[in-house]
Length: 126
Image (tube, rainbow, N blue to C red; front, side, top):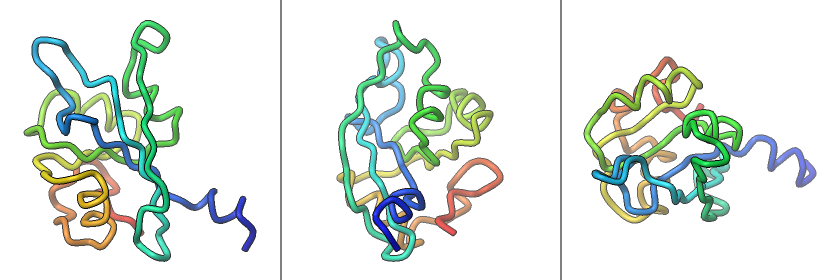
């Protein structure tokens, strides 16, 4: 398999930089780690920072969808933002604690309960 085929099948997961999706009184988080996960190895092959600028793209859910994000892992309790994310076919895992690579790989390994995810795909890797 060439590198383009491999990159095409990677699953992208967003994790807010400070862990929480919502930062009262500031609103929604603007800095996200984006992890690219290889379903075959169940490991993050890369993690990079992305900055959401609401002046350029006012809707966070649409921005994440345009990045190709499949899901969001955050430490918040469930909130009203779930509806907007789910409407863009992005699942959310709430109440997850730890370093970015740790929570992403816990999800990828199936350690995090699929029932903790929201939307039809239930946050499963496969």
